[in-house]
Image 1 (cartoon, rainbow, N blue to C red):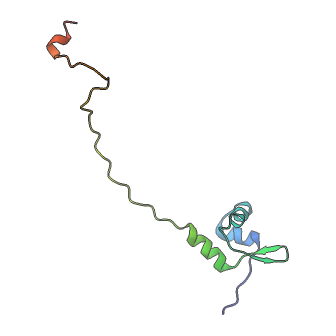
Image 2: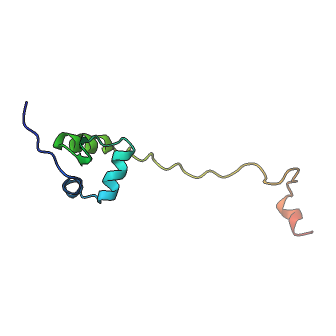
Length: 90
């Protein structure tokens, strides 16, 4: 078993490029493991690596855009179709 260095909250936040507040919130939400020594909260490198891996996502490919379709129905209920020649007479 290799010896692991315990990091303070400030050191862990710097390594993750996060604020200590964001790190604390992740810990309180159970997203980040930690070591409690008395009242002191410490993190291992493995804890930080596991946290990073849990946040890793893959962006799905965007589906191709569908061509807009024209509506074949009238928009008003009971609408009557008027021939173009009769339209000017009204």
